Length: 327
Ligand code: AHM
Ligand code: MG
Image (cartoon, rainbow, N blue to C red; front, top):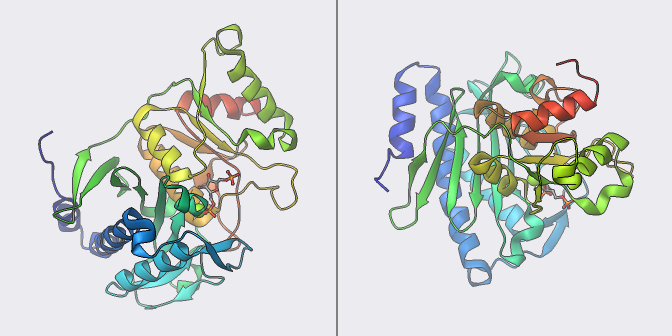
């Protein structure tokens, strides 16, 4: 395939169109630098000293793996060269104020899917960039629709950065030798209808009846109301599922369920659902709780969870209708 634009060229072009774009471009470039380093560590695994074993617990009670902590440190070091006002990391209990005069603020999950590290499966980094309001502390009390940019990196067979700057979605793959991200897909569009679903089926007995009904319809295949034989995939790494959906469509569900602590599902609003929902919508897909558009929700706390259903627009709309939406 012909070599596309580099990420650097893409960001330079973006920054040139508006002075307000400069700080956004700087933050994306910092994530690209961090991702290059994280990718290197992951590809070495034990050879890089990464065991994937738990060390401590974060504020949410999740076991922090060695790479969770390392990825967080690498990203902070890369962001130190930018003027970010407030930071919200999955690995830190509180929002941190860095440069109160910074025009933008960043929420990030340094390593999503970290239970997969030592199994040699795909993991990722997710980030959301917002405008800093007059009080930096209020940076993360804005709805997801206020995001300026969002992206995620999948560390898989290829390391790829999926990025929206608010006008479509592009994908850049890391050229490991040159240590440069190169554009490989422009203006990605998610197919409206793909018979493929992803859900952790082991939680079925805890689901809401509407989720059970939707999955029953998928399982009924050509004999069911959707009249299509569905395929099922579950990776346990949301970034990898989101990447697959961007490439070939389908639907991903992490609903709330009746397990203790899972009433709002498992995924976090600020640094998982908001950025992924922004990317889904920018690529023609959708993201909902079933009852509410994800981008309409504002976080009350940094680590707030939210049910997330995302992917091909026809399936997302179907789930919304099942939950009572008139459209
Ligand atoms: P993490 O940020 O602690 O890695 O958790 C988020 C991950 C998602 O990547 C994935 O979709 C989900 O948790 C997997 O959940 P489960 O353990 O139910 O398979
Ligand atoms: Mg995560």
